Image 1: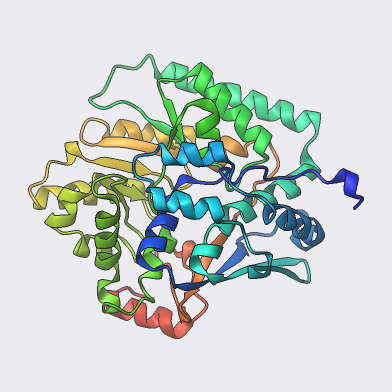
Image 2: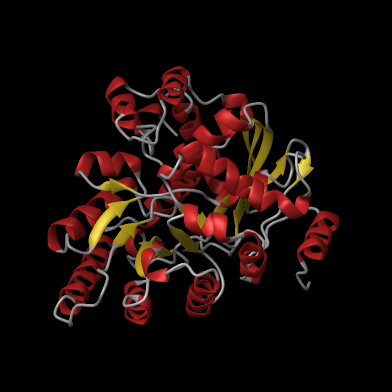
Length: 401
């Protein structure tokens, strides 16, 4: 590809999800010497072979590794009360190391592995996914596709305006954009979130994209992801059975009341609730759903809080698993008079233009030389390359195969 045709996908290191920063800070303070391996996965069969993108991805990664945080970006992060000054100082010196990430192909398949010190490789994830997505969908970016995307966007706005005429419930509808990692393009995500914010600001209140939150004056949204809790499976300071408690305790100590939404499905809701006792129920502001049936999950969470004599109406329930607007509104109507619901919508906001979105992820598979696993309540989301460890994890937490 000629040099003059290069168009960078990523132009700012703020163009990532907030929870990458919040987990990054916690790891820098609690486990700065951890080593980790993250692997790219495509869960479906794309129309266009991802392997053909490898040379372009290499160039985009070269560009990414040349970027630095700018002074005004560091000032923005420093202004978030839960971001500590020493972490911002670290970011002022940080840049991605190119030798920690490698790209290869297997037939039509694409392999991307980031391996090295966790505080140097964990932030690759969202950038890699955004790069692969945008390069793939540049081949679909025609006037007709963009026109269809804008038509669908106007349908979403109309649906929310219609919803606004319904009788008010106890708690308001709060929607955040969670669509960075699978967006059609950076420009399209900006257009979508800007349009929603202008048309229905009472409902669309935040975004996980830190750069976009800064540019549009939105609230940056996010706490923790699976990789944070999975890492504690390998740290060895506690029994495997206690890794969730250790991770949650470190989070409490790091953020002292901020960022109080706990992720529930690293090894399933049963195992999570067994660890989420009165202590954590009082310390955390709420829970995030990311696998399994959301209605059943919410009802179980409400029952658990009531068993602990904690009023669920004082808790935030964040739903973020493959949502579209109709499903979001149905969940809101079901829960909004009993808990404080919030919704993170991803692909259906930022990649709903007609072409089939890619189902791609980049997950933590090893930490400190040990396997880690994600064993959620949706079988298709299980991630582990070590069947022996997966079987042991199932046994420890009483999960059927």
